Length: 220
Image 1 (spheres, helix red, strand yellow):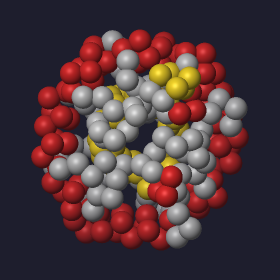
Image 2 (cartoon, one colour):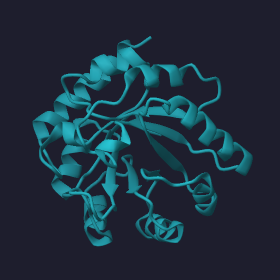
Image 3 (cartoon, one colour):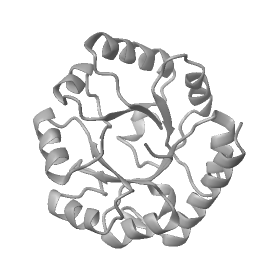
Image 4 (cartoon, one colour):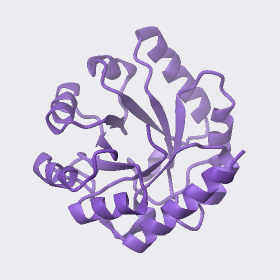
């Protein structure tokens, strides 16, 4: 569905800059405690600035499924990103809406992920993507801390796991190395292309997308 996502977009001009740079997804954060939080009205204005092909991802943290569904449907989003402690049963409540489930790269992260996905399979609610972020002790994303690339590489060896999206501390300077080290086919950044929380730096966005595209083109 996408390969390069710029998350935590708070302004229409940043959404347009991401699209112009070649990013094919943007993240809209509906978590009220995040410095990148947007409400539905702000999100609507951001979406209006996007070309149709850019994937619109709604980011939620421990939100009520009914609220997630309402926002997803009203704004005509393309993907739900669950970035909190949501149980597999929460995915069931989202119906057939596509989901990306985020996990922190904890020490026992792979077993936690595989157990979670196993429960999802039993419930018939497997997420479309798995996003690997920095450890949860650093909060619910956007910390700028690196995820564990060895865990990402180990996840890629699973036979039947959803597509991996690598996040956690990715910047223009390290995204190519991350792609080659992990085999990830999609990447996600927020703080790595910002001049301050929620405000994107257009030059950094361009550099990030350029580096990621070049790495994907040469990855084995």
